[in-house]
Image (cartoon, rainbow, N blue to C red; front, side, top):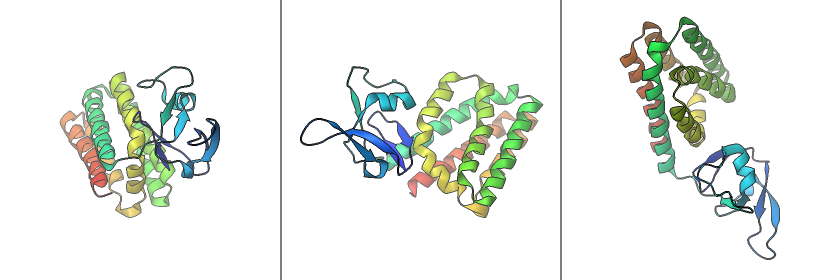
Length: 209
């Protein structure tokens, strides 16, 4: 499940994971709650989230906390648009800089991705998809784009899981093939067009969610 915080950060967590939260009534003490029992407005000590997210946009005062907040569909759609824009940017910069070894690394990742989708292994598909796109992020050298994409990607994980669980109906491996062909040919415009198609499709899932 996803736990969203007032800072805008979202954490993927197991249903059985235990969190420390501040009691809402009675003595102002802390108590343990399982992830599925968290509610909007629950207070979580800041150090527990800072260790995962860093302190950007958070208060750093002693005994400060952040709040659990509902995930809004519009926020997910906006996150998909932001992540897509970052990947378009790094693709445009990276493609002229790619070496044959980089493209081969992407092909290998896509082979693992396609195999995972066919096997219904969504978590392995997610890892392979990240590895494929991370090649372009790394080669671009744009740390700001990388950080922005990393910040908002957790918001769209549910959409990716939904897409990658489609098995034979999942179009992602085919889109990856087209992206790889464009990268191998050094065709920046085509690579950007395919990247736009990849992330536009994910944003459309948010609209139908």
